[in-house]
Amino acid sequence: MENFGWFLQGLLAIVFLMAGLGKLIGTDMHKNNFNHWRLPQWFRGVTGLVETAAAVLLIVGFWQYTALLAGAWLIVATGFGGVITHIRVKDSLKDTLPIAVLGILAIILLVIATG
Image (cartoon, rainbow, N blue to C red; front, side):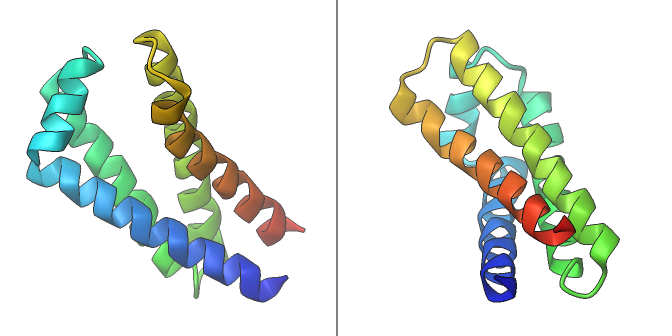
C-alpha cells in the first residue's frame, strides 16, 4: 500500500502544480472558467497560490510527513470548494466530477498516510 500512497501523492502534486501555475499565469481557460463561475479574477490568483502551495507541500511531503498532511488537507479543502462552486452555478456532473475525484483521492491519501 505504501507504493500506492507515493503514486497518489505524486499524481496529486503534478495535477495541482499544473492547475495552480495555470491559474497564476492566467491562461484563457482559467480566466473563462472564473468568469463562468462568477468569481473575481483576483480569486483565481488566490486559488492558484493555494493549489501551487498544496503541490509543493506534497512534494516536500516525500521527506517530511507534516508537509504531506498539510498539502493533502489543502487539496481536500480545494476539492470541497470546487464542488460547491460547480453546484452553485449548476454545472453538469461531467464538469464537477474531476475536482470531486481529486478531493476524494486526497482523502484516500490522508487515510493511507495516517493509517
